[in-house]
Image (tube, rainbow, N blue to C red; front, side):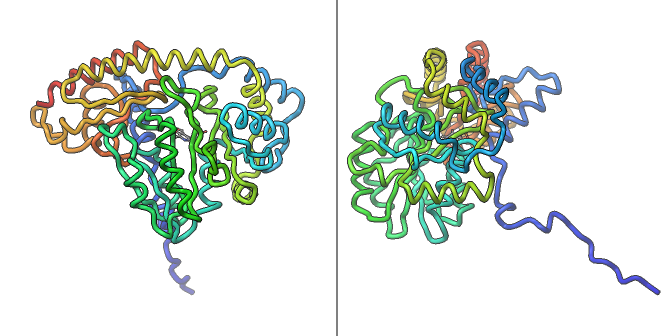
Length: 408
Ligand SMILES: Cc1ncc(COP(=O)(O)O)c(C=O)c1O
């Protein structure tokens, strides 16, 4: 008896359109490429990943060890352990002028997850989200994952990478639900002033369904100017989902802990989203986070001052390169020079048409890894992370300068 032929199973055909549309992202791709070149023995300087090169401060590590030794290794409540939610509520009120109750705070496994919880809670098909470019990569991807429509507004280095309020106002429609504001901003290092944020608050106030997602994860890496939390502006607390986390300021990237704070119905919804995908955040890491918030901050200040010295080095180095356009960098550990003067030029037989090609060429021919601005909705720029040693930064600047000088 003949057996009927079975249809061939192809796992690749199983992928959802959502999975097919998801890109691993240029940052990961460039970081991976530089690791591969290093493995082949090449002396590559990587300024790709936005990750502090410092170890987590000792008091935080000690608190995690103590929690582990005390058996604090079980599931956490979905929204987080009450002591940490209260510590965060105290911090937000005292440092940021944000009087959210502890019940409005939802911990997550990284700020990335907090962003997903927030966007999935308020955005669905038909909803528009205004994203101010250059923007951090995850916002647009997460809005799409939620079925929402990203409305990307661009700004240039000449505008200090801040979209003027009039352009934001003109983009608002009855379907607009959220404006994402990231200050200090990854990838540009821009910091929004109180007056600029007040202009956004005026737009929000005029529309009954509009809210702001304020990503303040770089608040402690601020060199110049004032940290203004959007939700602290008059009438804006209930209109703001505030995001923050431990990765950047406390050098805790691998610990995976972030949070969102919002009006109670939204906080409850964020908890429901999180309960579907991951239950609560890491329990013993939450104990360590209390130590981070309530312990000494000397290490946070020391790290910030190290970033400030590197910022000065990077700005001086980039300003010395003819054709490159760079503004000020009041916060974060990123520089985002505009490289449009070099695009379309050639070095020998190699013509560089885009910032993607420029980054590939700088890596392959000059051993310095950066990230193309196209990943951040700004294809005329490249991003350099200066969360790297001063020696590496100097080496990278020399290589970039010599590379770009060949692009005549
Ligand atoms: C602006 C911004 N928000 C959020 C995150 C995510 O932080 P976490 O490591 O806590 O998920 C990053 C990380 O690069 C970031 O740059």
